Length: 350
Image 1 (cartoon, one colour):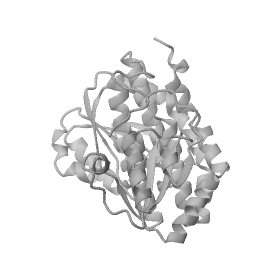
Image 2 (cartoon, rainbow, N blue to C red):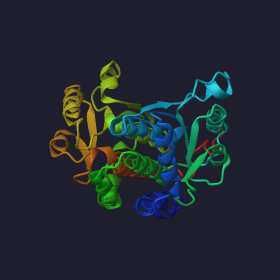
Image 3 (cartoon, helix red, strand yellow):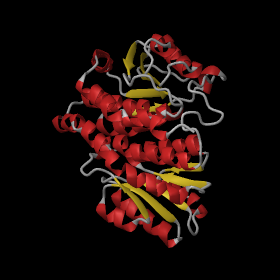
């Protein structure tokens, strides 16, 4: 088996600070044009078509564009376009396709239909040109460099970063821009816990089932962490918001059951504290990713995040320990992290 440090996955995870720094410091004219068109048309609705990790970036957009820009953000059901052929009315809407490869026919179909209906269309992709970028009025390049490993890492955080830049350019706030400029250093600081993560995974080498929980901005992080555990380690992992988890699924928790909780400092700390206490009362095991000292002291196992991460940007640095955890756990199971079984880099669905 190839030494882990020589794998594409390891290298691409560690490239993320530089990718994010490039996006923050070198603005794209395409984003400025998209902002111009959104304001010109007075668009307040965004319809996002995506799959996999890109769909999780769409979940982040729901909270980010909803809270900061007061926009209504929906995630597309592409089968309405490709199989049922009954697309919704997309008038006065931004139809946004998000895709690492820009090749999946169902995502392209949604953007094509949006354009046919006269909607403003845009693409966020790592492949310009591609089928998706050609379908859209405006194409935004992730500029992440080629991503070879099958699991998306640097393209995912690049998508989140571009969405954060878009949100701030739509409604500029000086402190938001300062926080964006400081983001690459925060991301770089995450790797200080890498050795801690590497040691922690040994405890979960034989884990078969778990849940991953996040709420608010980090609802997306729960889904993305869960996806990485499935595709890289073959663990049956279910993502939930903390509120949904209490509506029934908490029944699965018993002695030693692993609950991964992503809860950076912010408005969800109080709810996260309540949840940790409930899980521990049921003798479940909480594995916490957080920078809140009180929560870290309550959890069974923990991975500290850098201090003073603004909540709206926290999903970007918070997902990196999750990526590292999945990678190192896969290594303990002798899985080829660049080529998980049954997967291919570009998945074309209809």
